[in-house]
Amino acid sequence: MKVIHITASTEYDVLIGSGLLPNLGAELSKVCKPGTAAIVSDSNVWPLYGEAATAALENAGYRVVNYVFPAGESHKSGANYLLLLNFLAKKHITRCDCIIALGGGVVGDISGFAAATFLRGIAYIQVPTTLLAAVDSSVGGKTAIDLDAGKNLAGAFYQPRLVLCDTDLLNTLPGDIFRDGCAEVIKYGILYDEILFANLMRDGLEFDRESVIARCVELKRDVVAQDEFDTGARQMLNLGHTVGHAIEALSNFAVSHGQAVAMGMAIVTGAAVKYGICGLDTLDAVHRILRKFQLPAATAYTAQALFESALSDKKRLGGTVSLVVPEGIGKCILRQTEVAELKDFIEAGL
Ligand code: GLY
Image (cartoon, rainbow, N blue to C red; front, side, top):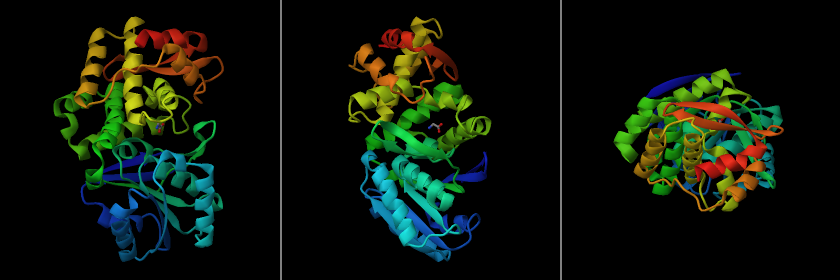
């Protein structure tokens, strides 16, 4: 097992390893006194791991209640959030109790936001069950729900008390969902770590989960320690996301987040070559690793369509967009790009 200590407005550990779920209650008792643990999960994850999580908590002396909602991004909604809050109230959850988010990014985000706001804040624990949640959304305290106008438009920065990542839980992930998470793993390599990138290139989908997830979490730890509230360094984690979110939105979310981020990373790297920011070798390496992980690098959407969709991106500040652009593998910069220039920049990468 690897333990990574996160230092943000509150400090906590991320535990990563095989066979950790049975220890959930014992680990929870180190950060939260026995009381009621409200497990929040979805219809995909609960049938697989609900019983084991409940037993682990009950064995450590917790009373367990569970809130299970239908799987899917459409349930990261205001309506579901209110249902969850009302459930917590009906079950008499107090400030001494806690929420356990057992699932992927949707479960983690909505549970975290409920934890941040119910009774003005109660403890929550992330138990990620997707690779994407393990390396990204379960760590760093971004919580959110979606609004009609876009994804993650209401939320809070609110750190969990503990993240328990049992790598065995990834065994039941469908291949395309696992590859989705791989796009975020590859992102960390392009952003910060040439060695991680080379290891991924060597091992492909067979990479060592414990050490690769731990490396990604270490990299995220450093970013969150510098910029918990996303005003600077943390924006680097959006590599591939400006164009990626545009692709996701244009496809009405038929293109998954990981696929869209993969395309976004390839497009922004293509543009970086045209603008003389990185060499063709970097673009070639990005294309090769995406192929190795069976992730797409190109989109049929036009630069005009991508530009219009990207303009509604919440990260736009006045007349500029913060684009994360590779200078090479393991080294990226934040490039403030005028909105007027954004379409040309995207066009250059297509
Ligand atoms: N998902 C990007 C971040 O946590 O900042």
